[in-house]
Image (cartoon, rainbow, N blue to C red; front, side):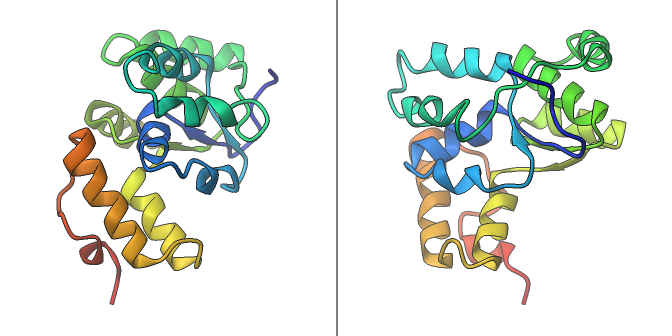
Length: 168
């Protein structure tokens, strides 16, 4: 493990879990300056006992998605964030804020906190849009992923059909 790069893209457990659930974590690997944090790795390891698909996410950690040591500044920020967030969300947001990066999360509290703190963020749906716009995934596949997340994993989405997220 090393420290995160400037402007890192920091993955939280939710996005990793969603893409693992549809067996396509590899889509995430090419995101710019992509990292995650040890707390996310721990959450995935604990969840893999009951959700076997999380092994797909664990398989790409380190080689494809580096697990980074937060800086002392990020560790200080994390202590404040732990007052309202779980460890994975707190550490991911702290790292993103410390390196002026982007956090990828679907957790409502983490998204609210990121917005309040001025941390750039996106989520699983935002990633689907990005992948479709960059021709890495078809809109039909993105729609299938979204529906599987909703139906099989209880994902909360503002819409069931993916096409509403694409700009005309």
